[in-house]
Length: 121
Image (tube, helix red, strand yellow):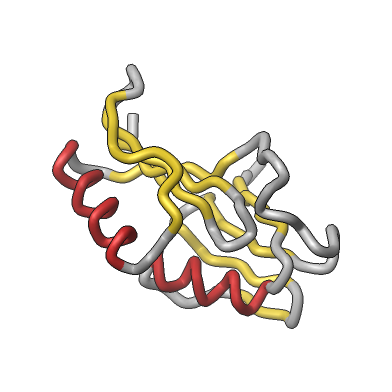
């Protein structure tokens, strides 16, 4: 059986969220409809943004999950992404720190969904 993992992020405005994620990931959506867009992150991994499922999501509502971008490289690479995202005005929830599994930081998209950057295991 072939499997693929798709993370779905619920947003208020899918095209706006796709522009946000496209800028962060430096890529264009691989599939687009007015309320649902996906990004092909590599073999077996996709990220989708979907609007219309939960109207008027509030950034103030605590999120119980996060998208983790596991990157190759080392601590300097995590720091470089942090500096890049911060310069773009991305909301930073936790600055780079060692979380036991290595260097990481936590950001949020405009809808308050959490995005973690960490090193690939």
